[in-house]
Length: 293
Image (cartoon, rainbow, N blue to C red):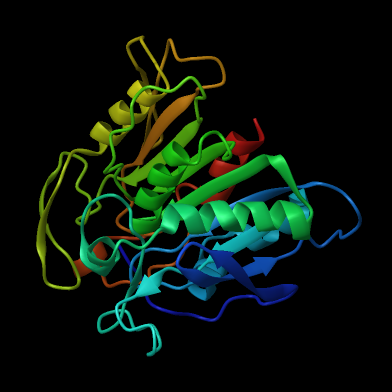
């Protein structure tokens, strides 16, 4: 649900201010290395609770991939309880209003869906993004926000890639399916695969449902009527929905030796909080292959 800070690669990165419901919001934008005039695919990546845009930029493995593939990257900032003070992981964490009813974002009704929609529009209008290739990924609380925004932005997101976060919303079945590849860790103490009570880094105790409940919610959203297919290879289990609406692919990947960390990324929280890191899967590569398809 969060992370600590390290220094990211800041080449070709600029700060954006986006007019959004409730007032201006901020994001980091990283342009493709190739440059030139074209409509770029764009990935919007949402940090976890306690994280920042800079942290997500530096530790999720998207930058080198984006240079090779020609991807516009956007890293929006969540809100914090005290906006006048800088973000701090424990004392003043940034977070998203992900539909779970938790935290300051729910109490104050922050319109993060509106912000993400405004950011997507700005990427198309001012920064060369292809409106048909806007993808939304996120980690932990940011993953949960990706589920919510993917459901509520009415087809404006081409696909979502939530990592280590639940789908807290239960959207009704749609005629405009949104493909989803979700990734979870088999040794994640903050989102145990079978569900259960967890103690967050902020001291609260919460019940988190089994991870396949999120898979089932998105299957229902995309009108997937068939029984899921399951495969297991080299410590990675994949659940794939069947009988979905056209272009409504839904998959869930569980990396058996991964804790509450970005797959393939560094360990940013101690193992007693977040379990082990793992390089078994490159999360950015896996998600991009899914998005591109």
